[in-house]
Image 1 (cartoon, rainbow, N blue to C red):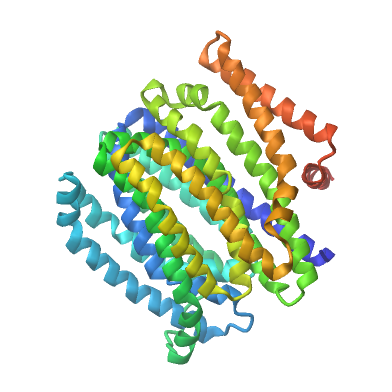
Image 2 (image 1 turned 135 degrees about the horizontal axis):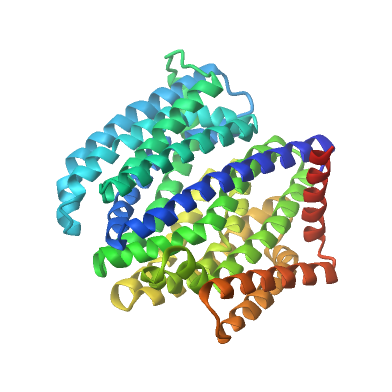
Amino acid sequence: MSESLKKKTVRGTFWSAVDNIANQGITFLVGLVLARLLSPHEYGLIGYIMIIVAILNSIVDSGFSNALIRKKDAVEIDYDTTFIFNLVLSFLMVALMYLCAPWVSSFLREPELIPLIRVMSVIIVINALAIIQRTTLIKRVDFKTQTKVSLIASVTSGVIGIGMALSGYGVWSLAGQQLCRQVVNTVFLWIFNKWTPKWQFSWNSFRELFNFGWKLMVSQLINVTWKEIYQLVIGKCYSTATLGQYTRGKQFSDIFSSNMTNVIQRVSYPILSSIQDDKKRLKEGYRRIIKITMLMSFVLLFGLGAVSDSLITVLIGNKWLEGAEYLRIIVISASLYPLHAINLNMLQVQGRSDLFLKLEIIKKVVGVGPLLLGIFVNIRWMLWGSVLVGIFDYFLNSYYSGKFVGYSTISQIKDIMPSLCIAIVMALCVMALTLLEMSPICMLIVQLCTGAAIIIGLCEAFRLPEYIEIKDTVLGVLGRNKK
């Protein structure tokens, strides 16, 4: 990997990681406070609404942002066309949400959802106003600006959410937090980025972007819908409180899996797109990203699962312990999310949005199995089924993406196997500590220290290349900061 590209990748990865970690960290801390003030049922209500919002946001984007990032010679009219299209579509989605609110409420047997859905539908328009601002920053690999914006939005919305909860607003405190975050995020993106639309629309530009983007949009729509439908099944077949437990457990997992996946997607896509014509450099960058990412993913996610009981007891109390049981299963499939993202990014870099769509359809057909287990058996069977489907998805994704650069599935597995083995050994040792009698807080401290010691010890003993690279990069950054 050339020095300039390496610096660009490191800088982009650093600021994207800071953005995600700081943003999720603040959101997580706010969530700890809110979880003690609110009930699983109230979290479940917002969980329903965020399912709808996530699906409609995918439709509004329509894959145009990825099409713009990939297009090397994108001009002003391309951005204007996308902006106008996104905005018009967002108003249509809000109208749809408003009209369907009573039906959704009746279907889920939750009368409180009608006003909540109608108020929170505004998020879709607010997000549409920010799509191009975000896209231009990603295309320039400028994640520093996005980090500033995210921090401001997270802190402001957190204060609003906690204030409303303390004032007795209940579920509306969660709605207020979500709305405030989107508004502040969008406003400051416009302030810092300085891009303004010229309000010009080109059908030629639209057709070009849509030709690539629509397949990604359908893929993303299938993916988002499928991911969220698990929550819908839990809420519909069991209870809103059970959905709240699942959502809370998943939020712990998302702190690591979603952060890493977002960082990898945001940084690797523009970087790999810039060298898409150089197969040797593309393979080198592709392989390097996978090895480093999966060491972090396996260690963090398996470690999280190992300390789930003590962590949740200490942070949010015994009333959420059911979520810890779900979390231990969720982290297994979640550890593969960054790997899915890297392999799927390679298909986009190669311009194969058609193959991307076909693979999504195949994976979702296979994914019907766990869904049926959730409906007819129980949640645990559904989650274990999703683990098996995640492994199948990996083999499918890596087979096709690896063909483009000569990096096969077997080669990938050989590269990530040392990291996987080290993470498994660490997790088993940490879980074995639960046999000891001690308070939850002492147990958590002992588990964290033991886990860290095992990981560092094994990585140093075997001189794991990806660990050495991470350590050297961190020490290098710290050394420069001291100067």
